[in-house]
Amino acid sequence: MIRVLLVDDHALFRQGLRSLLESEGMRVIGEAANGREAIRYAADTHPDVILMDIQMPELDGVKATQSILEIDPNSRVIMITMYRQDRYVFEAVKAGARGYVLKDADATTLLDVIKRVAAGEALLDADMAQNVLDDFRDKREELPSEKHADLNERETMILKLLAQGFSNQDIALRLDISEKTVRNRLSEIFTKLQLNNRTQAALYAIREGIANLD
Image (tube, one colour):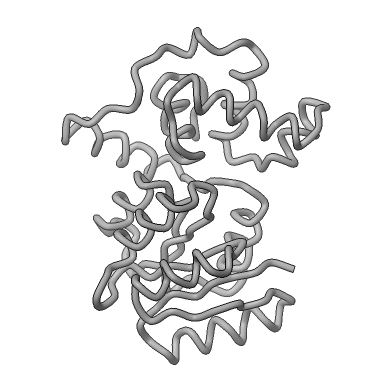
């Protein structure tokens, strides 16, 4: 059962999401109306997935996501946004959000995104990945500069599959290794490349030509 934390300042929207998710066998373990509540709930309950609205009072979804990921880098945050090109989505993805979903998405799309992120995927389409990479460039920010030659063949393949959106379980099946081995190898990859999360790893792999999303 996937445990979900809902974060949105509109009670009716949260209630609608709760009804949908619970009808699909998921468990809503908490609701937050602003970013500060979200940080507290996330620290207390450790949900499998956090659905995070961007625009909220007191503390917006981007800053809340940044704080949550500083506390627990393994948190799986999905941003909820009205607009695909929302500037705040880029900032959240850079901070480590696993993906985003539009508020007008249909139920099937939302449920699919939640299930895939809960399984360990980071959902970045080609346009979003390129926009975030361009954003790093425009602000003169850089991902770590170490070349992927520091990675061995198996680590490079794991990084490539991660960037292509495969979950730990899928990577394990494709490479005929255990999920625990995948998790351990990913930790080693993050350490070697000085990365903090799967989203940064996916962006790094795209930038270095290890993977593409075409």
